[in-house]
Image (tube, rainbow, N blue to C red; front, side, top):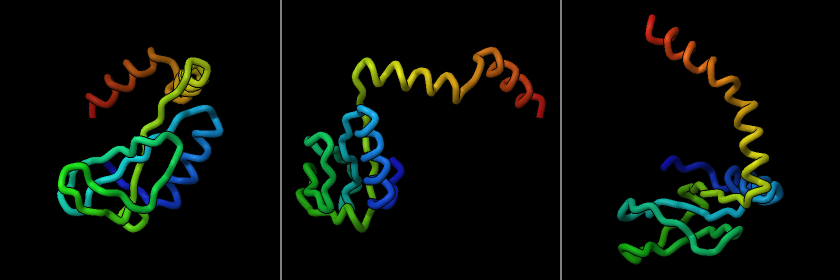
Length: 102
């Protein structure tokens, strides 16, 4: 899992929450390396206690990420955005063929 600066992730998460998503903060234990997911939705913590080794990680210092879930309305809006972002599926086939020629 890629970790990002706490300040950047929290701003992005706030926008996702405003758009209707439910956010779960994720971080990596600085001691044993196990990925952790906070149980509380739409809350960001600056420190976390690892469920595996019991050690505390400074999430604000080490960075974090998040998982987002969406209800049906948000999912429909996301699908529209994704379709606009990715374009026509027929173009994907052409891209793959063109990239294989290189």
